[in-house]
Amino acid sequence: MTPEIIVNGKKLEEIKDQCLGIAFFEDNLKLRNEIKNLDNSINNAIGNSIKNKDFKAEKNEVKTFYINKNIKYLALLGLGKENDFDLNKLMDATSNLSKKLRNSGIETFSLALNSFKNKNYEHDIYLEKITQAITLSLYQFTKFKTRDLDKIKSIKKVTIILDNEHLKNSEKIANEASIYAEAVNKTRDLINTPPNIATPDYVATAAADAGKKNGIKCTILDEKQIEKLGMGCIMAVARGSSHKPRIFVLEYNGNGNEMPIVLVGKGVTFDTGGINIKPSSYLTTMKDDKAGACGIINILEACARLKLKLNVIGIGALAENMIGSSSYRPDDVLKSHSGLTVEIVNTDAEGRLLVADALSYSLKYKPQAVIDVATLTGASIVALGYFASPVLGNDQKLIDKIKAASEKSLEKIWQFPLWDEYKDLIKSDIADIRHHHGGIDAGVMVGGIFLKNFVKDVPWAHIDIGNTVWAKQEKGYTVKGATGFSVLLLLNLLRDWK
Ligand code: BES
Ligand code: MN
Ligand code: ZN
Image (cartoon, rainbow, N blue to C red; front, top):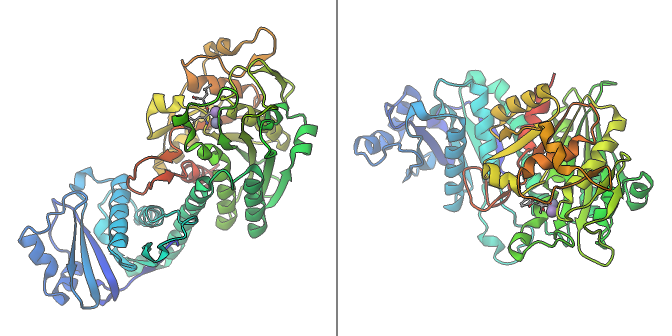
């Protein structure tokens, strides 16, 4: 389903394809030599449409022309003003064009990379982003469709045309960029998989399969082992469900004995809220509550495919937050893996319980840093809307690294504070700590301040993807449904680690 993406150093007038896409800035409509040569071979279709103002290159404008020569169609794409152009706009433009061409029934097309460039970035960056935009924007989740399959349109192949001098390096860049984008799309697939199928055991098996395929060691802990390890928080969350909890541990070894970076993911395969049941309108899409863990499986797979020189361990804590006669309750006191006793306030704040036990378990790997990714709070939506995820932690250097990765990956994050004042909110009268304060104030920070207790003094960051995990609307390379947010961010972080 994902298109094959290849690079090619041919001259534009020699391209044979169903469609060729060329982009223009609205304030720079002069034809460069390479485009002039092409234009000569297609009866000046480009020059004429610009002269006649058929095509003005306004942002998101797409004009297609029937040429029926080497190329069957020509697609002219507007990028708007050159000064306003940036990598987000590059990805938006590429995504919109890719989807338009697919929806019009085209199956293969070429893009003239040079026409998408201004002077602000290196060649490699344009190639990386354009490759990712194509693969991400064309994502479709069709696994459960059984009717009218012949009506599902898809792009089979995209050729990116670039200068001959860039060709050699470009193949590698495009391949790597595809690995990133495929990791996102596979994450989307797993998150989108419905909760009657994607149970904790199903997600754990997906981790084991990814491990086997890529030569990554994978250990699956079942409910008996989880219990024996004293993970009272995970056990409690899982108790209301007939689907037993699982933990996967994927260990990618790319650098000998170096201390590992550990990634921990929340994997709630469905979040009913438990006894504190969610209102109906909040229940749909709660299959996305496993997104943290799903991303981590594919990040680990990508580490192996990219052969990163790092040791990375991915831990997913998997359970279903169901209601039943065995469900855990508000007022329960749990004994966590760390030994801390936890008073339960609201069974819908289940994610931090899974993550707490997994974080505390992760310390046995003597990590140089631990990062958890979790759909932890609805409060993240209140705080930041749907564009940028909160990040919090105990180590500014680590957070600064994540910020740098965010700039590169274009996945936005925003740092929130973990001031000691927040500690008072979760003091307990009867146990060591409460897992929630029972209020709606400072929801993101309360989640963070609770988790902080389980990492001792290891550098740690918490990324709350509660607000970015799911897209209600299509926008740029984001399609409706699971976004796969955090995968590009963390892969950029790992690639640039040190
Ligand atoms: N999984 C949810 C957070 C969430 C909500 C993610 C909406 C994505 C979209 C989490 O387990 C949760 O239910 N949080 C509650 C906690 C509160 C009721 C104590 C929240 O933040 O509303
Ligand atoms: Mn919940
Ligand atoms: Zn949840």
